[in-house]
Every structure is written in C-alpha cells, then in structure tokens.
Length: 433
Length: 144
Picture 1 (spheres, rainbow over the protein chains, first blue to last red):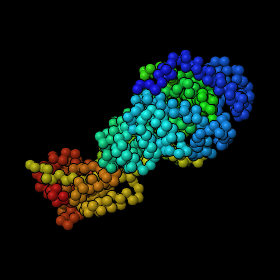
Picture 2: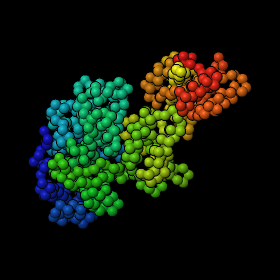
Picture 3: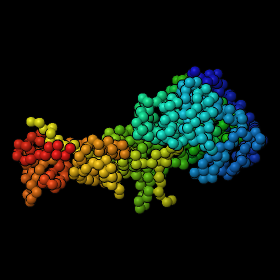
Picture 4: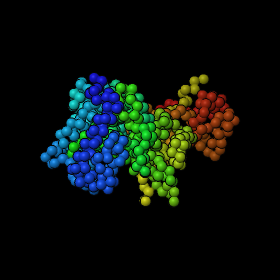
C-alpha cells in the first residue's frame, strides 16, 4: 500500500490551507471560550477570535511555551472534562518540573492515524514485524508507536528499552523487519549484536529503522544504513504534540507534517517573526484537532527548516528538515553559537572517527574550552604514534573549520564512551555559570 | 634468502593514558596464560600505544579484540646484542651504515643476552643488510 489515506495525503495545497483555516478558526473560538489561560493570553495580546480572517492571521495569535505547561501543572490547561480523558503521559522533567499531557479518545485516534500514514509512507504494513524499542510507560514513545504500528496491521514486538541481548534474540527469533528506537540505541544494539556474533545484515530480517526522539544527522544515517543494511527514517514528535507523530516518507527528504492535524511555522527565536520556507528557525506548531490539551503556536524549541514544495512521493503536506538542534541546547563557546549536531555532522564525515563521541565544555581560566572525545575507528588504528597524532590533528582541524571555534580532540578507546538506551547525552557542560 | 623466518609478529594496542589501562591488558593476557616476552609503551598527549611480543600473538589478539581493544599486528625484527658496554653501539652502527631507518625500537635483556626490537620501514631489505653485516637476527621461532 502506497498511501494510508490518499484523499487527504495528496489533497491540493489550496484545499489543505482552506481546511487548516477552518480548523484554526474553530480551535481559537473554542479556546477563547473554554480556556481561561488562553483567553487571558489573547486579551493581553489584544487579539479576538474574529481577527482570524485567513490562515496567515495565525501570526496574530500569542505563543505558548513549555513553561506554560509547567506553570499549569498538572491539569490546568486541559480543555476536556476528566471523564472524557482516556490517557495521560508525563514528561521526565529532566529540565525542570514534569509536564502532563492528556488525551481524549479522538486525540488518540488522530495520533494513531498520523503515525499510520507515516509508517505506510515508508513502506511498512501487514506482514511487517515492528520492534518497538522506545520506552513504554509515562514516555510517549513506546505506546504511541505501538498503536500506530498495530493500526497499519503490522505485528508489534513491544520490547521497550533495555535488556539488549534479549532484544537481539527476539529480533532474530520473531523476524523483526523494522525497529523503532533512538538512533543512539540502535548504535548500541548494533554493537552488542557484533559482540554476540550476530550480523544484523545477514542474521536478521531487519530492513527499516524508525529513529527519533533526539537529533541525528545525515552522516549518521549513511553510516547506520551501510553498517546494518537497513533504511533509516527520521520520526518527529514531542509529548506536547501527542508523542512521536510525523515521519519521513520513502523519499527520505524530510518529515511530512500532516496539515489537517498540525499547522507548522518556523520563526526567528529571538524576534518571534515568521520566517519563509527554506529559512532556518524555531519550529512552532499548532495542533489543530486536539481536544484535551490544545496547543496554539507552541514554541517547541527545535531548530529546523520548512520545505513547502510538493514531495516527489506525491504528498502535498509540508516537510521539515532534520532537526539541527534545540534553541536551549545551543552552546555559546567564546561567543560563538555551536549546535551539538554540527559537531556530529563534521565528525561523521571523517572515516577515522568511530560512531561515538562526547563533547565536554569547560572553562579554562576566563576562556571556554571545547573538548571533543572521539572513539577511534577500529580499522584506523596505527601502531605509529605519529599517524595517530595526525588523525587527531585532522579531526581538530575539521571541527575548527566547521564550528569556527578552537577544539581540542582526545582519541579514546573504542567502547569507552557511555552508550545510551534512551536519549543520549553527548554534551557535558561543566562551566559554572 | 628467506627473510620470513626473521619477521616477528608484535601486537600493538591503543590505550588511553589513564590509570588501570595497562593492568587491564596485562590481566587479560594473564587469564589466557599468554606470556609477555618484551614490551614497551609509547605515549603521546592523552593516549599511548602498548607494544608487546608474546608467545601466542593470535590468541592475545582475539582476546583483546573481544574485550573491545583497538589492536593490530605489526611486523618487527629482533637483533641480538652483546650484553656489555658498546653492545648497542655495534648494532646501531650496522643499521646506520646500512641506511636503515628505525621507526621505533625497544630493548630487553633476556636469558640469552640482550635483544633490540626494531620496527623499520623496509623490513626485507633491513633483514638482508643486517644479516650480511654479520649481526645476529633472532628467528620468529624464538618468540612464538
């Protein structure tokens, strides 16, 4: 099956935008009437639902932020009554107080539909066995993917995270054809498989990776595809949008955002001004049909670029490019903005560098200091110290050229850097600010 | 001339420069009952290379590889020296006079005299020149 719902997925852009306008208008009326929080915020901004006369009027509406969810913990932003709710998820709260998201029956249906379209667009369906190695529980990843995979008629192998050797055994025994997990966890699975003497390419049926929940790069995709003999697809979502929600299609040219479900904007994170397609900025999303916890112009904090051309796959819905970093992950080193993904991008182009690395930011005297620890590729080890020094110099040189800051590189033993089962932590900032 | 019998397989291991790394390597070899006949550590800023001649290089290679070490085989040669003042001079002069460039070397004083281990750029050529100069090369069978 090529499309889950060709009628919607290939609807002409003008029709999609008309649909978005109607949905936006009714959403704004509903929130103005039923959400004390958003009512007040619209009043502060001196905007009334009647001011929304066309789709681009969305720019008049106030933003919502992560802190709004925290400040209204646990349920003050919900716009459905408690007896309409069928699910809660809770974010881990690693960066502050936890946030709670809630779902009505329709919210779950839309979330599942969104994933059903995405998984179909990458070629999955009946007969596939999808191993869901995202965490199950309060995190949205496991259950979200689970429902989407079941909806398209695939068989779900709900392994969740952890117990990697058993994951690999089950992958072989039950013939998993696809795996959904973080890119870091797939790297870990690949390495553990090698140690167990299992060749993912030859000894398993795995052909597809659905990878997300953390930023990764094109270079990592190429390496992972070559190493494991799979096609790796990007998936995007955050708990505030529902969970993992949007994926790339078989073209692998960006993540399709279904226009009937979400209105995506890219804005300048400093001024809040809207940017044109093709310009890099902060993703801001309005979830058009959410009942329990609607989000209008939610500032996700992820940095990306919007592509509005019709995709080669025929789908008319806009795409976002790979997430290039987070507004709040951006490191400022000696006054220069550095995104961790830029470091990965530069490293993955250097053959001597292995798949794992870690950046440590510290302050030496008055100056910021960026140290990047890289694992040396097994095939690049030379017995001669001089060759190793040259490799290190080359890595330092390439990083300096692409980041515009001085970088110290440390070559470390393979396997010595931490491996991650969930979201990885590739940057350690030791600066006491 | 068959130079092959003088080519010795050294194991080279990448190691971070931090406490316990040598112990980890030595422990692994000990567990496999592998005897270390000679070894040296070359260090650079932050990392080093441990080089060793062992009695069972293939076994050592597989064991360390399974533990995740970066390990490689390197071909070296071993020249016998007189264990007395001037012994190193005799050998070094032969090498110098023959135009053999040493990439690195280390020595040990064994039961049967002192030995200089050498990594050179053109190993076959070096073996021939050293032999023709009258110095004694140890055969691979002495080690493994």
